[in-house]
Image (cartoon, rainbow, N blue to C red; front, side, top):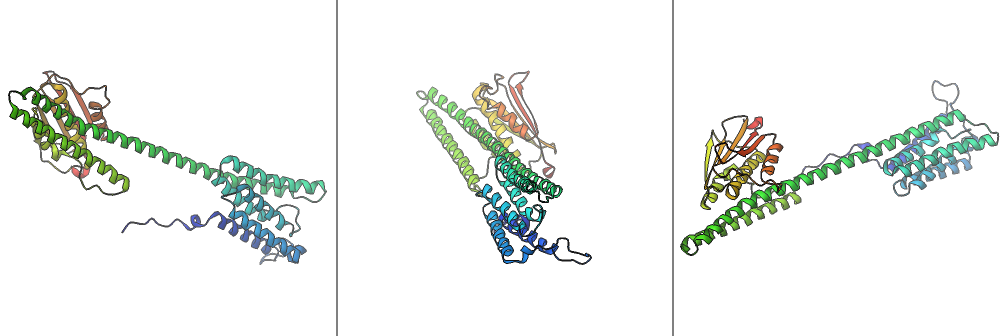
Amino acid sequence: MPATSPPPPLLKRVPPAGWTAIVWTASTLFTLLTTVRLPGESVPSQWPAAQLYRWDGLSFLAVSTALAFQAGRLLQRRPFLATTLAILAGVFETTTLGVDLLPMNQYLTTMVVLYFVAVAHPRRIALIALAMAIGTLITYIAVRMLRHWPAGTSAELAVALVTVIVWLLGNSAHQSRLHAERLSAEHAAQAVTAERLRIAREMHDTVAHSIGIIALQAGAASRVATAHPEAALAAMRAVENEGRQTLAGLRRMLVALRAADTGQDPELAPAGLSDVDRLAATTTAAGVRVEVHRLGEPRRLPPDIDLSAFRIIQESVTNVVRHAGTRACRVTVDYRDEEELALDITDDGLGQGSSTDTGFGLAGMRERVALLHGEFTAAPRPEGGFRVTARLPLPVSVR
């Protein structure tokens, strides 16, 4: 049974329209509550206006509520209209209170709308919405002052300050979300690049060795085709077998990649040090003898170390076949050190490693070792030939 992720917290499950309705309802109830003398008060905090209890006041309250709820519904699709409706809702309700400013309670819904606009929309749209809200406060006070009506300028400044702070919080949340998306995109791009490099290494290591063996067998067949047709036939059969194995390996790789894309588990296990003997037998049959020596007690290795160790040996043997001009090489797998796995591949050839202008070969082996935080060397031997060594640190669990 697949694991299910836990449901998001309750606060995140409430949509913006729900928060708009909740804040409007709470602020309206609080406004009504302030018109009642509460315990500990000698008089109510706000004397009720006559309009609040008349039919026209109740009508304005109903219209304001409808506007506020509609503002919440339009938040995602039409932010400017949602901001306008929230402002109008606050203004209409204020007309029933008989006060000299737009109170904080009646502007809380506008602040919530501004927050969600700043979170979900580009900064240009959010700034215009903020200008609409602040401009309304300024216009409200200016009209009262021009008509020589009382105006609560200092209290309105506090409302404007809180409005700006709420908008800044929404803008900060928007920037954090954009930053997280950029990081996610960068990580995805890095993962794609790493996967492409891994595929390139696997393709090179798989194909290069087989092509080297095929070329060696085909050359041998062409040299003995006339004098020894049986040997030529055997060489061509070896070419056929190696070609089939290469195709099978490529098919397994494609199956594994497809299974990774679809979330399925590939049925075929990747190569590892257990395949070194098969590699040695195939190369020996092609004309280059590979002697394999194991020091210490073999033990189970993590898949990444096991695969990388095999690929390093495979690429080194391939280089011997293609570049060394010798008929033998030696592979040593050292398990004796409990903290690391040591590999040593030597030959008595011309002292030439893999060509470095292709970007693969030695560079690919060095990259594999670096990813595992190991040590890698590849250089001609003083006594002649070439030597490749790799030391791969082992995790504590396999020591």
